[in-house]
Amino acid sequence: MIILDTSAVKALGQGHKALNRLAGNMARTPGDRLTIPALCLLQAEADDEDAARRVLAYSAVDVDILDTVATVSVGKMIRDGYGGPDTCHALYCALPRAEFTGMSILLTGHENAYPPGVVTVDIDSPGMLGFQ
Image (cartoon, rainbow, N blue to C red; front, side):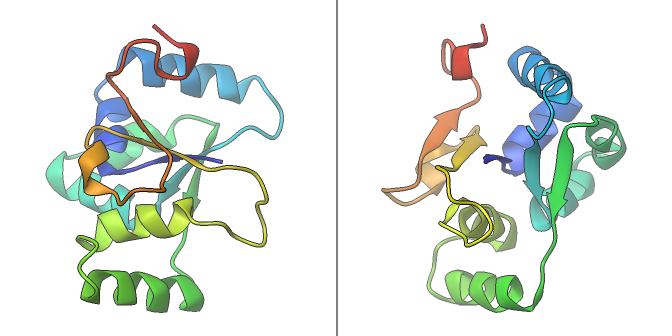
């Protein structure tokens, strides 16, 4: 699963070249999706008017909602000092989950916002996911 945090959502909405290519390529591959945690989408929209509209226009984008289990888990992460609501929702999405058995990759502009053990890729790193 490829997850976009708030910084990656904002970058995608502002035309980030590598992220745009990734979203376009994933749209052509059945079953490949970019996952955006709902609280990251919320924060991106709060920071940048129409960010949600621009990002949700990509057919490869799914939004990970806050169900009961996610809400409680994210709340505990916030209380335990892992970051704000959007950062903790992205972290929650990157953790192993029953419905997804593969490795999750968290795309971000702020790799240092996440604890060790979370696979993060800086959206501006050379060759990010093979896109330049």
